[in-house]
Amino acid sequence: MALTDADVQKQIKHMMGFIEQEAREKVEEIDAKAEEEFNIEKGRLVQTHRVKIMGYYEKKEKQIEQHKKVQMSNLLNQARLKVLKARDDMITDLLNEARQRLAEIAKDTASYSTLLEGLVLQGFYQLLEPKVTIRCRQQDVEMVQVRLINKIIPIYKEAVKRNIVVKIDLERFLPSGICGGVEVYNDNGKIKVSNTLENRLELIAQQMMPEIRVDLFGANPNRKFTD
View 1 (tube, rainbow, N blue to C red):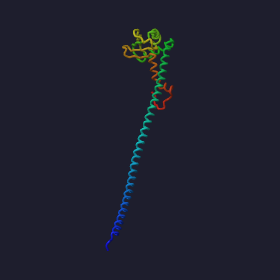
View 2: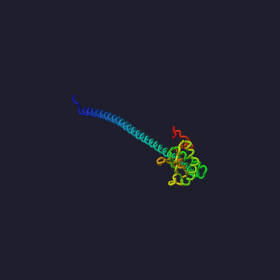
View 3: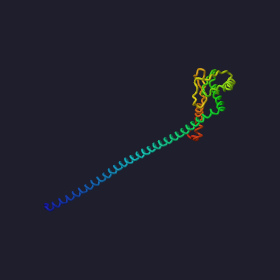
View 4: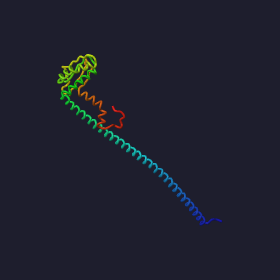
């Protein structure tokens, strides 16, 4: 039995409805898949950028921490240097005051005469030469001559059991501006014992510097040995 036009139109309409339904479902499936892939990619990108941002700020935090450590180290070093300079200045002032007081020693003739005797004798004992030359301040020449004849030479001869020829240099004197003391030379002048008061102060200051630092600033807990 032949299909009428109405039947054909009905079948065509039915087929078109089916095709449209299938197309809508396909579109929905594609949209859903696209949405899923979009969300996955978005999540991946977000995570990637989150990791980058966290890495960036971690790096910045480490740089800031390192900068703080460097600054703190610099500040500590500057503070230490200031303390060391203040201590050195204090010791320098102390030594300068001691040098000023040296000038007072020669004003006490009796004490200074005894001191000169010891300084000359020490020079003799250090050289142990048969001939020596003494150089002193011009104002001390007479005092040295008297002490040589009366005490120094006899004491030396008795101690070492040998003779000694002593000459006082009357052409080249020690500067009158120094606090006192003597220089003792061997016969050819190549060996010298410097026993000026200034030189003795320097030697004593070097030898006693560890004790001076402890007395002024206390013991250093970081130092196992003293020099």
